[in-house]
Image (cartoon, rainbow, N blue to C red; front, top):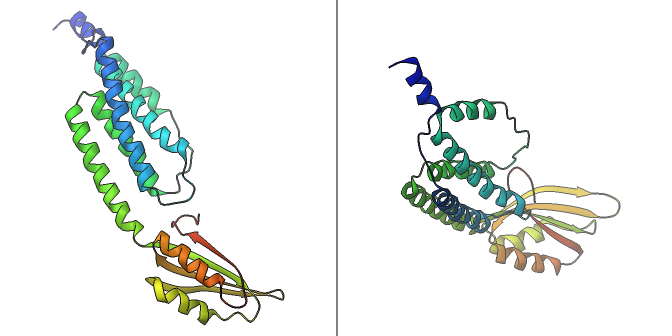
Length: 223
């Protein structure tokens, strides 16, 4: 093999894709991204749902598809793309490890679609989506909440604990704060969403209770 043959090998296209084929791959990536989008929305259990983050997963997938199409077309572009991507630094802090899972999932499915492994992309997307939905369903049966009760200074924590223990799966006293104006008691409970509203209403009817607040405890943050 001569020097000219080696140079031509680097500059010639390895995969000639027409506009229709590229559009089909992007539409396939959009369908996979829609499954990821819906899965994230269904399985999200916090209160600060971010539509922009969820949409970003779909865009990341489509961008990965484009990158894979470019890489498969020419070796020179491949080497240039590796160099370009190596200088990118992401400084956005991701507090929830679950969000990292969805970002990585989007990138992997984008690689599958961009490399034209459509069967792999379809099967793996549905399989992972089912696992996440099922795991989210079982998690939803027992969510961890913080119950913040504010009332008069003579408020008895034991009475509140009795009401919580009648329905919640687990009840634990976290803190009791008192001052000249009143008392604040914080409990940690494990229960479902519907039961949480019922317990809040029952505690609110107790004597010397002024207000009841429930916060979903997500691990990294409370919200």
